[in-house]
Length: 417
Image (cartoon, rainbow, N blue to C red; front, side):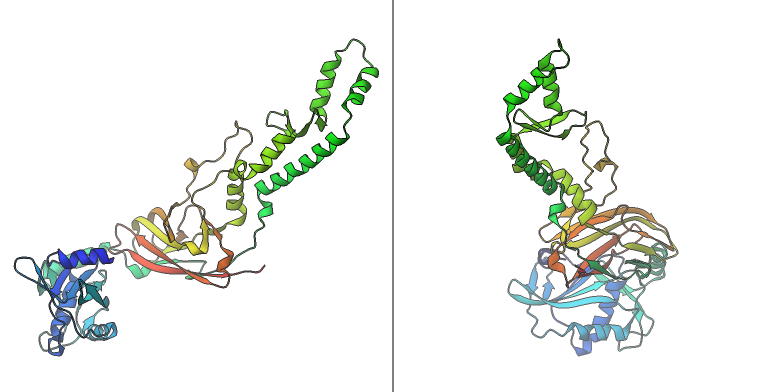
């Protein structure tokens, strides 16, 4: 939760199943109360993060009274206390938080799939095996109905630790990436620019040496077919010659007709070559320079995962993520190329500091490993990443995943060039 949302909780929201306010931290003699409240929050029928916020007293009229917490213990102390007294392990975070000049403390309780949580051992107030649950703004002992609801949800949900995202056969979390030194002179725009420049040199050289009058006289004098229309022969010769009338033949179009350009037209093509061959360059980069990114997902649970959606968060520093599938450009407008409508390329959203990649997988079978993306993501990695590592966060959502599964993959860059 970001600061804006936390500020809203503190200032406006009333106590409920996911939120509890405490004016002061628990002292040593009230540690059993802290254990009880954390256990109750963890058992609550709410799938998201729960909060105990210290330094706030909720008054009867709904207003707040704030109290700065003078001495805030380390998270490790809170974790040790909870781990020693509650089972199974509860995922929590504890940290100081400044609000309107007051020093508060926030305890976040995460986790949902390992309920019910209960006491490991007796303390001054509760016996080992007892379990508490928070409902609304109150706390009570876990009832039979609560247990039935917990186990019903648990049996339908997927265990998060049984869903793996990784690379290769071993589902490794790390991938070594070889960054190649790509040569931009291989781009279609670069090749066509060189071609136009070469044709321009040929044309200029020919114009300097050309003697059009002697060529015309030669045709008329040596005409072997009297009565044939000489201008028609001359026009055919112009079409088939490399250079004629200040124009150069650079090849044929898709209909087989010659393309003849003047010096000015060649210069214009040279100047606009990047724009004219932008589609060809994008396709070439996608197919030749960019590298594929496509981890595997393994569902080792006994149930299918339903309506699965996966997000990858890729920092922009890694390079350029190809935002969509680029079709191969066709010179013949009658040719049909594969377009975006026929592509299963993942959804790519670009933000200030990262790319967010989204893929809908539908149903993921149990005991089955498959590639996450229907079509691999293409990334043109930056040479600035050589000898560096980059962490990529992922989230797995599903109808029977109670809390989104989060994790990280590591890309380790090197270069053989």
